[in-house]
Amino acid sequence: MTGRVLRVLMMPVLCCAAGVLCADTVRTKAGDVIQGEIVAVRKTKIVIKTAFAGTLAIGREFVESVAYDKPAERYFARRDATKKPKTEVTLTKDGDGNLLLVPVKDKAEALALSEVQTLWPATGSDPDFPPVKLWSATVSFGLTGHSGSTEDLALSGAVSATRTTEKSTLKLYGNYYKSRSNGAETAKYFIGGFDLEHRPWEHHSWYVRDEAQHNPYSYYKLRNMIGGGYGYYLWNTVVNGRTSLLRLRIGLAYTRTEYTYRLNPWEDRYLTHECVADFGFLWHYDFVNGLGWNTEVTYSPQIDDPATATLVHESRLTYTLRGFARFSKRLNDIALESGMRNEMRMLSDSDTSTTDSTVYVRMSKTW
Image (cartoon, rainbow, N blue to C red; front, side, top):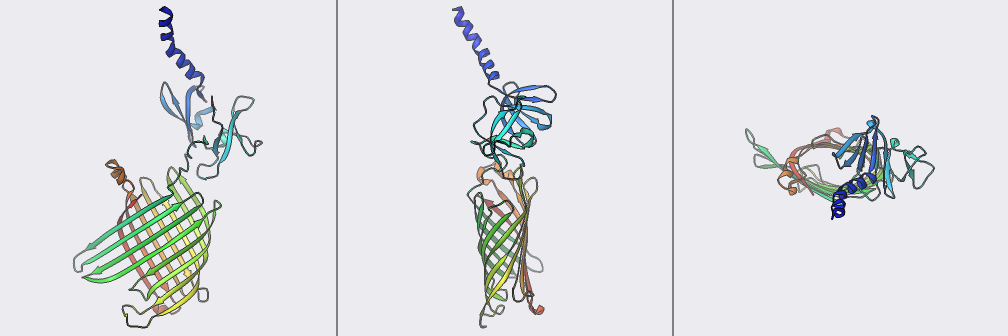
């Protein structure tokens, strides 16, 4: 009876001892030894889950050494947490007992923990670049207006679907805008198209795009442009879920334009076919607290007459209303958008050059 009671009393002690014997270890420069389970090694901290103090985040500048009791067979190590390249490694120790990361493909290039910013098991998810949805969709709608000496009303809407993989992005999109002043229609256009980009290297990509526009209030009735070329990313980083991106493009495009006189359906229409250069600029930046900025500019001069060109500019400020997610997950990713779109058609005869500008405020939902 006494032996049975003794075994029962000793069981918690033995379990605790086994937990200590099988624990990962973090040693600080101050001489502290913290044992538990290392759950994350990140750029600025090491996170360890302990039995006596819960989960602790220790700044890497205070860490002297790290030791895994039972490391996984494979890990991924990343030297720069803002860039996607990673190295598959195994863990071992040097002659002094310090942790070494040995690349699977080149075992001669062993790394110390201080040389990497992120370390995670190969069976786990990437903490710096979490997997994105294969398909995402966004719907936007806006209705604005005012009354006074004039009564103005503007209706705008946009839909887009994006397919994203490790090295390619396909975007399908459509935009609609219509405005009225004192009951009379003053502007209307439809824009739709696709943009396919393949990015085999970090900074370099190629693209193919097509865009069609119907604008009965412009000097052309229908315009379609299909083109492709080379893209270069000056930078493209994701830090704590916030994206910073700057991309340039240069290519060639073919345009087919059906011209007509403004608001005169009885005039004869005629078609033109043009070969144009295709220059593009895209800047996207996510600020803190759900605020983001996006600016895109395309410039398309004719090859045989560079003075004839089309310049399209659109800037948009987006604010994600994160507070709605408290009531329902379905209300997540709702945002307010405010932006401006300008389209300038420059001709050799400057007297016929035109500019169309629209301003919109709308609400969007992303799935």
